[in-house]
Length: 266
Image 1: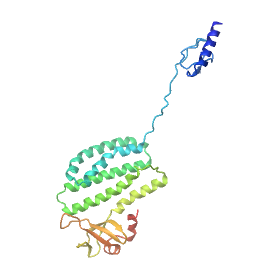
Image 2: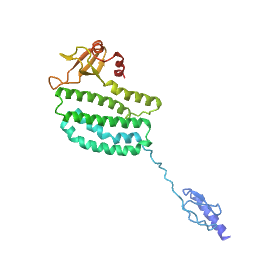
Image 3: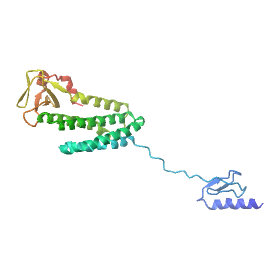
């Protein structure tokens, strides 16, 4: 009887204190405060309440991880734009070390990455290889200064095309199958867009210079019916030889074909 009155008192106390959440006794199913350690009715010990965290674990943003992982490559690029070539050569050993470390971490992450982020990592790897080639050109004293300037200028164009791909990942957009297909197409066009063409005629006039046959040129840009063409070879000064050429002459005097214009319209 005494236990019954005690149980009634506890139940009344629970009703008067709604701030205490109720739980049921594991022995007699009577309601009791959530923090009770035993049942006053049947004297059965109660398990401790487990507090579940309301905050769920934030999902990992793999896109941000990859961009951050290779951000030092984008930072290193700034030295090329500022023409601080001594800084470029001085920083390159550090960049190589950081790239090796980044690749090691990326290999662990790669199995969990979607296809578009694996493409992003490949672009950063290609960008690093481009930097290696550019620094090699800078250190090579046997290369003509004008030719060296042409190589660096063409490399900066390739870099800009890589950056166009990378820039898409900084936008708030999702990559479904159609977007991934377009991404792959954009990447595959870069080497075609920047390929070299041989002069097949007796010469090709670039500005005031008649560039002789068999020399290689690169089409930097096409606007309307004209192309901006640059010689990938020595020059008489420290600047590359370049100039405007009509598309008709370009096709007639070099190995360039009119179908290639599609590479410049994307």
